[in-house]
Image (cartoon, rainbow over all chains, first blue to last red; front, side, top):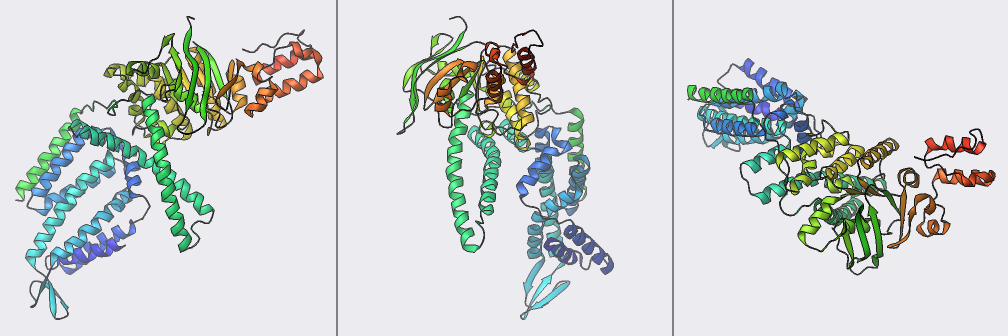
Length: 300
Length: 290
């Protein structure tokens, strides 16, 4: 909802004086409505992304290819001097993730809404300038000063926001279609330090164990009225975190035993997919990069 | 002995500043056996398994693998862990990878096998546990029964001669227990020695030939399972209940005196023969359990 209203305001300021008022109203209202209607707030953003990545149809595309494509596209997007490149990537990645990966549109928009609201707030800061005299095309009087929007500021804000949105979309495409373990595999192959990789594997796995432990304990506490009022919930939460710490310590010992019993000595090694890059996938990625490059040169 | 797989001699183990968890444990496991380890909570079953697997080092006593004494060297420990696999009670204790395929690859990779062999072993052990097509699934979204099967596949991929299963039936629903029973039987038929600790006496009675009863860190009985369940004193000491089939057979033996000479059925499927034998319709054919 907040994102929706914010979008309306920002769109209004961005295009004020560049588009007729009717089109402005339509664009701002439309985008705002889409965002606020699909802004379904669920809990556990992280887990949502994990589930979506596991079920995406694109998760069998070589993660290495996706990783490099996303990285190159981000570089192109950030260095482009026209907002069209960023907008193109935003729309393209949305279509790719939704139609190609089989992700529900409202899930994608919902996930996008959170970073988008930060982005829009930043955009507002870029748009307005505080001046003594009214300048620019739009002005709001505030305690004897003017908050003004100039055309130059509009252009600048548009570019920055398009760049940010474009790069964000590339990252979303990567993270919404690639399960975490594949991503860690990619990092290993580009020679991240072993220690970091091992830690990532373990942390990723134990997030789930810790979380289920936490949920079970929280529910057990709630069933004994542990959260009845403010004071008890404070005390319960404290106890809960303490026993969580204690239990995870014990669990860690047991996990280490289990790893040792499978001949673990040093360094976690899994068999990773050779990740053969399919020719058609590589060609598609190449074409996309060329197209984006072309766009950024054309609109230079 | 030629078929001897693992032998423990006078093994004692004590956790830091606690009462001894294992007291003078001596036992021999032969190739191809199926054994249950019974005993109440805290009797030392898990400690016993951890010692057999080389995770815990006994303060005194010796362990022999295929007749060879295990010293504490890295090489020996490795060989012990590879030959004697241990399936932990909680699958979540064991599972560390983000996909089932890489999870199962952990053991073989640690054994330093080459890529092709590891791939082969993953395929084979997943197929054995009915987990084909699970390679890319994330373990944390699997059900309890599936996780259990993954944790067994983990060990199978290391191709051990003997597998220790720590309470595999705990927290499984009846359907999954039945599935597990079948799987264990198949594994045993391929020559793998199985040692299972359990509280489920009915499962134990149907599954095992030999039962080892632990109580307060000591082996108080190690014999054919039927004999163990006749020993009231041991059952009382270890806090064990008789299996249902055992109880029924006793009731029948009380009513029909000649039943005492017939071998007791260990599975429901064998019970028909047993009952017919008692009723004399079959000319007193001996109900022979498989």
